[in-house]
Length: 181
Image (tube, rainbow, N blue to C red; front, side):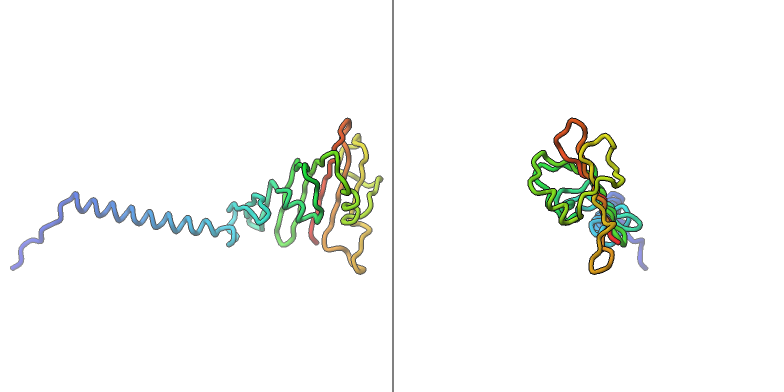
């Protein structure tokens, strides 16, 4: 006949139980961290990441929102290289199945050939177009996609680029709104 089985002392059983709980929590934390690091690629809403151009972004239920943007992002999206010293007042890039860029830039007083590059990319300046800039600003002009055709079709992006100078300022301010079609 077998006698009673000797029990392991309580402090050892408790130590093993706590070690098991700690191992389970550690494994769960590691798996959670790995999953969260992949969350933006999988499109999990509200995951934050830095995109290829260095802008801070977060995923949403329908896409991505990046704000604030870097100058590299603005240059890449607009197709225009802005001069050194350009500052971003406000910026946002919204991406779903399409994308929309809204940015306000303040350019340094010396802008070299920027007007030529803007005209080449966005068309001629029109003085009598509606502008989002205040009416008391000087040198206001707007460039839009309205009269532009690419091989008889509308261009793949829509744009409104408004420029002007605040009173008593030398710096040109650009208000840019671009969107894919």
